[in-house]
Image (cartoon, rainbow, N blue to C red; front, side, top):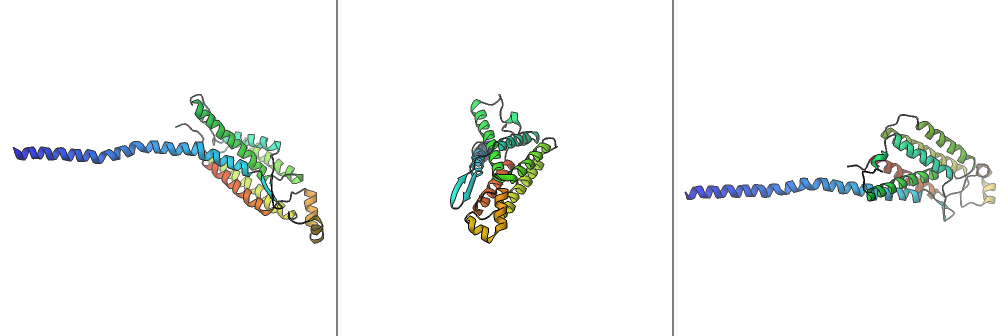
Length: 242
């Protein structure tokens, strides 16, 4: 009889021990969706808006002769950015009803609207970054962007193909502005008389093409600005619905 009671007690101890071991595992499984939701909220509502606002800030900064100049975007850049936002929707990079909808509460819809506005502002400043500021080069590059965006609106794009196309388009414009045109312009720290004597062809090109004189640091800064923008687009969700 005593042996039977001891076996019953031992079996109860084993069962209690099994429950004690399995309880943390069950709790971990229950916490996993909550942790994923926190990371998603951190990405959607903090990291992405701040990244896009950083692009908006850096896109207009230029360095010239030891001073910092902020270039305001031209009106046509707003048109380009609006076309780019439409292209995002057409290529399903953004599902509008997944960001702004009556199904969401007011706070979520407001934060989503701010994020979309930050994307629009960053797009404006990226065009401001890669398009020449003035002269005939401004009109040539602007026409190329207008033609490309207009044709892309009627093309069949998926998200990855759109991102590759944008990366190639902005990269080419960056090379034209900060490599080709920058080498045609006279250095920002060189005086006109010295430039005419030492390199009259470069001085003539700077005057004829109306190329602004910026230091090389500008090109490095704008390179990282464009890279940050493309990376932000890669992680941009098409919807905030769970």
